[in-house]
Length: 547
Image (cartoon, rainbow, N blue to C red; front, side, top):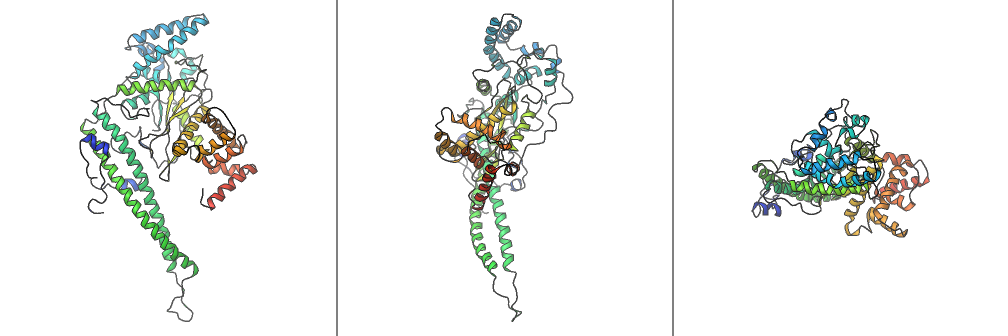
């Protein structure tokens, strides 16, 4: 590569912010970090936040779900006092209503105080949440994380259980407790949950750069994926070419003239024709590789410029209280959605409402175990296609301390980065059935990703299109997504075990567009003729290269 052949113009948004009309792409990058699979996250971007490892093929092994030695924070006699301290008049109001709720003997009064407590508590919790970016005491952190205001509100057995929950994200997976999530949003490590452009204070220059870095890194991730894919494609073509060339050099002498070789065999002639086609493919690949390199260099230059700007600003991102407030209000609405209209909306963890066992609480480790279980059945559940490349991208999972029973997806991916951004799902921490709560969230994610992929044609093409045509044919009423979620649960819990519960057409659509893993398919094909026929369809599509 010579001159400026692979140097593109600067991103327009970046150029506008920096006050420049553009710029060159800088020196060519070291491609060893791409083809060597180093997995290094771009500078200036926290690995625990948005960074996605596209080389990962599964979840890490869960070696421990709970600590062997419990911590002593819940034995602090001043836990309740410290949780309420330094929070102003709202803390006094919360304390007063809570006392009335706990001490009254009249069921009607108790119901009234219970309802009166909810709104002031959320206002109080907002005050506490604004401090998550600092060094808050454990009692306030656990109040946000578990909704535990007083250790005596739960039984000694439950207190012992919660004292063994692993506190830190030792597995570095995108599963967050509420306090961790708000801290990430407040420091711009995680982008706020909004469909619009996040608003940043005018004087918060570092946060503005951080937003642009988010976009630039998304483009860089997408360019890296394409560059690696084209490089792999070229390697495969070269391997086949080498084999074909070697085959045509294998000649047999004529019997009559030992110093003269016989003509090419029919197989060698086929190889020569293949070589011509492969050379055309190689030239096409080379052109696409040049474009990919250009995109990568331009994207990396943008990321480097923004990283330098952030460093020049001091490297630290100003805490955005406005972002925390907005995110907190969003989470408050999410909490209501997990519970539903008829559910228990009381916001505190109380022994009389808590009925979960050790494996039923939505701890980080329990949820990761279930996410891995789902992936062992639904092969491509966390995968998205970008430019014909299938990428495994595990979604963000936010754990909210509610008594809800259903999880859901509120964002299938970041609109600024469709290539590698994570989707977002929420899971209630104290459901009746944790597996079903996680399944509903994953099903919602499945539907929304497929719908966004099909765009304007979601009622005609792909998973959503085929399901919609069946739904209309059945003349069903209501929310089509709710039907899909319930069918997905049947697909994962019954059909994966060979128990036929779904309509024939739905089963065929799911088998095609949400395929089971190979192990599950191999098991099912021996169960009965229905699955054997679906398995044979896979083989037929593979033979016709139409799958």
